[in-house]
Length: 380
Ligand SMILES: Nc1ncnc2c1ncn2[C@@H]1O[C@H](COP(=O)(O)OP(=O)(O)OP(=O)(O)O)[C@@H](O)[C@H]1O
Ligand code: SF4
Ligand SMILES: [Mg+2]
Image 1: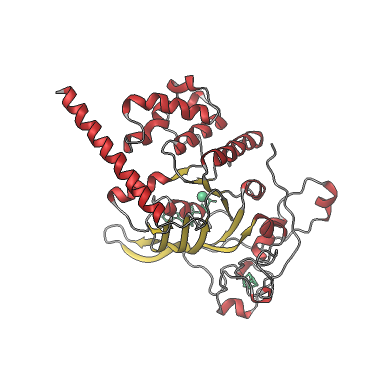
Image 2: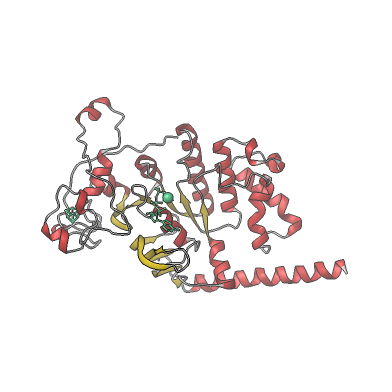
């Protein structure tokens, strides 16, 4: 009886493995070299606002993500920054299929993966994994490290058959710099940095191609942040990973990112290479964010001109007309009230050539350069 069961299980696992390989091969053939690994287009997530206890009726919507587009290339890191509540985590959840978009499309290796279910969803989820913010709450305190890191294998047994799991988990612990002998320990027996390593090992278990890291070092001490960032960079090279890296610390994002997108009230307002965004920002919001970052050189710090943004971020349930940023922008004019600026290379830089610093998309009618330099914040 037992032998019969395990025989059937092995056959099932072999079948699943073959299915996965076929799905990957299919994706590879329709995916030209150099094409983005992930294409996000006009992504929208509106959370309904309801009133009433028994008879709930929709009275509005929180426009958490309101038309976000970007490409992610193989092996690159795209940083996403912006103030609290601007929609960064919601973008992360949409890409990893933890939330369903209200509108828009997601393409993975050229294939539309926006609305999937069943096996197709499972196959895509395997390749796009998430690493969460808080290493204190995101790990189940009652599970051993071995169970936590090996849990993805329960959903994808084809990746590591039961008999091989312990070895695979120990390998993963080793890869992220943890002692493989700690496999039977519980999360509370580890420091914050070690717990984040556990979270990363779990994210790596299924050998994904894309990792979406939502504030992965925000809860850690600065010295430990550097170690975890360095680990993520090493793993990126080793496993050819593509990262979407979300953080509100602009220096950390500068250190790890190849390109950076700046979000405000559900939209990307400026996007470009790390140098374009940090050395040549053209959107007033980016300039204001950067002006608030301390500079280590005391003389430069003294001379630094800070832009103080007036007022709070408006509610995403009722964003301003035209440009979402206009209620806090010192350059706002009538055009900003009546006409929404699109995310494109601004008209006044139309003569610039691709590769030039100002030649990058910025959603502002009056985009202009303003010096602002933020040093990379993580060393090592
Ligand atoms: N499940 C939900 N239901 C209703 N509103 C939500 C839900 N999830 C997020 N929101 C709202 O959507 C907006 C964007 O939230 P999100 O968590 O994506 O922002 P964030 O940029 O990650 O912020 P933070 O920097 O604080 O993590 C916020 O106004 C938030 O309150
Ligand atoms: S479009 Fe107008 S309000 Fe918006 S950022 Fe540009 S100048 Fe400011
Ligand atoms: Mg968040």
